[in-house]
Structures are given as C-alpha cells and as structure tokens.
Image 1: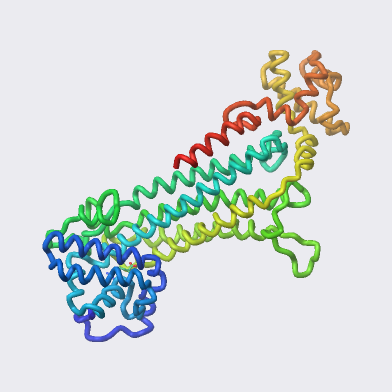
Image 2 (image 1 turned 90 degrees about the horizontal axis):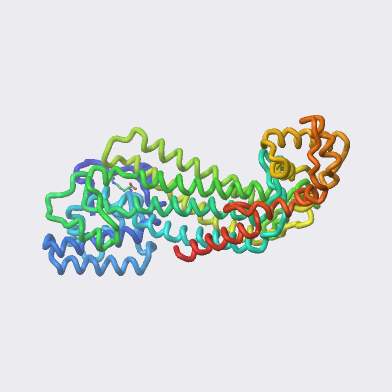
Length: 465
Ligand code: ARG
C-alpha cells in the first residue's frame, strides 16, 4: 500500500521516525478499528461498496481487534496507526481493502478515534473519582467529632473537625467530577464523514456512523470537525484542576504530618525514609502527587500553544497535541488510585487536635458572638473588646481556658466604659472548642449534625450517579 506516488523519493528513515505518531497511537488502536468498521458498514448500507467486500473488511478488522496491536507491522514509514491498520487489512484480503478509505480521511478518522478512546477513559476516570469521593465521605463519618483547629492564612482560625475538612475535599472533587461529565458532552460528537475537510462526493450517511459508534450527535461543520481539539484542551484543564485540588489535599497531609503540627500520621506504606538520617519518615507520595499536578499544567500549556495560531482544518501540528492528552490521563489515573490508598492509611492524633484547638484563642469569634447575643452590642464593638482581651491574655500569659467574667469585664471597662457581666458558665461554654463546633449547626458547617447531613447528601449523589 503506497500513498506516496506523488513523490519521487522515499522518506528517509529518521525523518519517518520523527514524523510518526505510532508510539502513542496505541491508545486509539481499538477506536480506529471501531471507526473503520462503522464506516465500512455504512458504506455498504448506502450501496457505496459491495456488501461482500464490506464483510471481508469487517471480518478482518474484527480479527485484528482480537489479536491486538502486536499483530500490526508498526513500521514508522507507515506514519500512523490508520495506515498500519489499512496495511494489515490489505495484507490479508488484497487491494479490495482500499475500498475502506472511500469518503474518509485520516483527518476525520484521528479525531473520531481520539474522541471514542477519550470517552471510555473519562467514563473510567469518573468512576474512580466517584469512588474516591465515597471513600472520603466514609472516612468523614468516622471523624464527625474529631476536633481540630481550622486555619486561615495558615494561622489558627476557628475550631472545626477533621470530617469538616474531609468534606471540603470531597466537595471540591465532586465539582471536578461534574466538570469532567460536562466536558464529556463536548467530546461525544461525531466528526466522521468530514473526510479531509469538505466531506465527500459519495452519498455517505453520517447519522449511521454516529449511531453505530454511540455518539450523541455529529459535527455540523466538516472544517470545524477536523480542526477540533478544544475537547482535548478542556479535558486536560479538567484533569489539571482535579490534580490541583488533590495537590492541595496533599499539601495539608504533608503539613499536618510534621512534628510541629503532629495532627496526622500517614501510613508507613506511603512514606519513604532517608539514606543518611535513620529517624526519617518522609511523605514522598504526597510530595510526588503535588509535583505531578504541575506536569498537567505543562500539558495544558503545550496544547494551548500548539492550537493558538493553527489555521483551520488539519495541520500535522495537531498530532503533537495527542501525547499531552494521554500523559495527563495516565498521570491522573495513577494519582487517584494512590490518593485513595494514602487517605485510608492516615491515623489522626485526636489528642493533638484538641490541644491545638484549645491553645491559641481559636474560640475568640465565639466569645465575640456571645457578647453580641447577651448584650445586644454591634459585632464590631464585641470584636474590639475580644481583640483587646486576647492581647491582654497573651501579654499576661493567660490561657484561653482561664478567661473568665472578671478578666473580660476589666477589658470591656477600658474599651466601652462598662462591664458586660457575662456569667462564667456562659463563657466557659463558648471557650470549649467542641461547643463552638456544635453551635455551628448551619448547612455546610462543622457541627456533627450538619456534617452528617452533608455526608448523607454526598453519598446519595455518588450512589445516584
Ligand atoms: N497521525 C496523525 C495525527 O495524530 C493522523 C492524521 C494524519 N493526517 C494527515 N493528513 N497526515 O494527527
């Protein structure tokens, strides 16, 4: 099979290798066979080719699918998988194989294959992601009362629970899942029949191939169809965003597992040691995940840059887009798998969580809220009093648990010229971190009841997907 009759010289071997996409075409091997079968079946149905010839071609293609890619001659001079497959069919049934390329081009074929292969990859990824979300929700249900301090600016902010943090993770991943599902709609469009760029003079039926290949619709414009790679950029963005969200979780796992935080311990099976420092336990898995998210940004940037100044329809530059897609897909697949195991290996130091929540005035907002509720003062005034109270406690070495009505009144007299007369028992209640958590029984909040509702709705969501 020769498509170079126009040229007088063969391509040099190293040039052929340089141009070939065969290395990463393995991802579209099966999709290309399916695409060819659908096309040939349609050609026969429309009486464009003989049914007998069509059957021979389809039978050979099905055999090839069974044998797998190893049955192909992957000589780089064949350029790509499309030629290698046609070459295989030709080697089996002779030149009648040439009928399979009527009204078809590698330009519409490759983008059809990519869409088909990506659809099944995304279905797989979405399942994995849902599973991860579910696992996190399960872990959260064990930690509804596991007190810790929440951070803003990485400084102690307000008491919360480990479950509340876990649900933050799960909900961000749910959006990543939804983004992928939405992108899927734009992948699920059939370009086949666009041929090189202007369709064909043969009376092909694009609806037939759309149906056989299981696409939801077909491209309305054949130039747009063969030009389209925005679905790849969009997918990589979705995956990069997902990797970013996972990377942020990893950052917290790394931080919280330090001696200084001492909040969690990552399972040994997800940690490394040092070749020189015998005491070390390093969170390398979380670190590598954190770094790998950057590789996906690289993929995204490369794809955007390749596409930016390309004229419409097919340009060979488009071939260089593809490896970035598979790189991103493969990377995220591994990240999700490993993340799931690592999260379930984590042990929480509950004592340390309470200790941190109690030690550094993370209950200050609750004292201000109490003043507002009891004395009907504007929040700004209460904020000022408590700000001064915290400052005094720090100066005089008074612990949050030692704050009482007397100390508060000393401060309020200075700030607003009068005592607040808030009872010690009332103060004691809001100085207890777990009480602060329980009081936040607002949707999305950390109270065990609110968290339980979030877990239920998340798990329902996962089950209904
Ligand atoms: N290997 C090519 C790619 O990945 C397939 C399409 C080639 N088309 C062409 N006219 N050379 O994009």
